[in-house]
Length: 105
Image 1 (tube, rainbow, N blue to C red):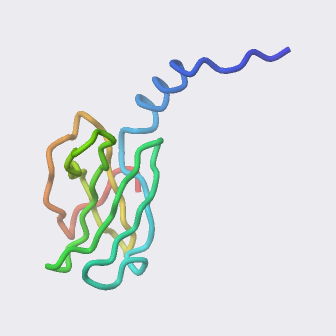
Image 2 (image 1 turned 45 degrees about the vertical axis):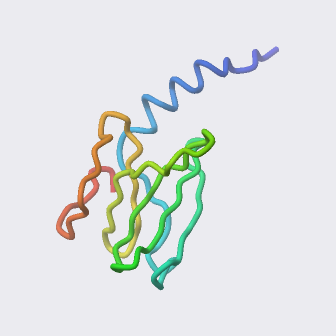
């Protein structure tokens, strides 16, 4: 007989083991034009990746609270791929650098 996993333990493991670091979202060609966006769910959190009017690609965490403004998350483009970092310890928005490589990429 198997015991169903404890939801609290699962959430803690996801937060510590998988949320830290950079995670592949999609190719940049998925949002080719200004104003295009892509909605994905990463570790149970809705993330919107959008190509802004200045042609930069940015990612936002969608808060579930009423009237909550989207919270920017770290976003990097490397080799034509979009990566985001949801680590709470890295909560400051960092401008994307074309020479920066996500560590887990």
